[in-house]
Length: 201
Image (cartoon, helix red, strand yellow):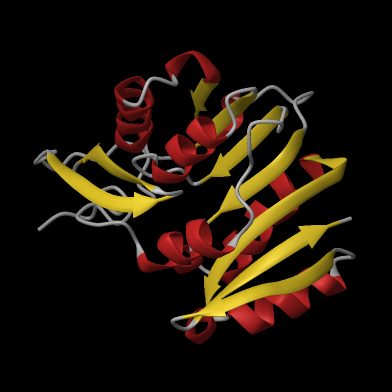
């Protein structure tokens, strides 16, 4: 047995490499994955809903985009391919996840525009035109709130945040909490028990 989780900083269990295939943004993807990263064996259902229902960036999108809690990098790769003039910052506490995201960015030909970092290594002066996240609900509500308090204020003045949260894991209560924190929050879509939240200042 191992105590490793997808939010473990340095997993010690064997990587057991595998590949994950999925469809998003009108194309087929095959990305490398491994044990002890988030949704290691398939594209997470919430991530799939987020990529299907939120408004993906496009060729005219510029600036810095953030994938918060990047896992093995599916959101990072989709954003970087969809927005060839933007830079994507991929952030995760899990070293194995960061290594996989780096490898997957190279696999899909966007390594030159992807910056993969641990949270504390992102320069403080970087702001984001978009923040994308399937946030780690299972770390606990206080930790989740701290995470969002840390990163959402780094949205550019006209920036947009996109979050996906399962309703049964507190999607509606998180919506209310974000409003209480002073954010403008729209339930952009609901599908398969997930809420896609659009967040602006």
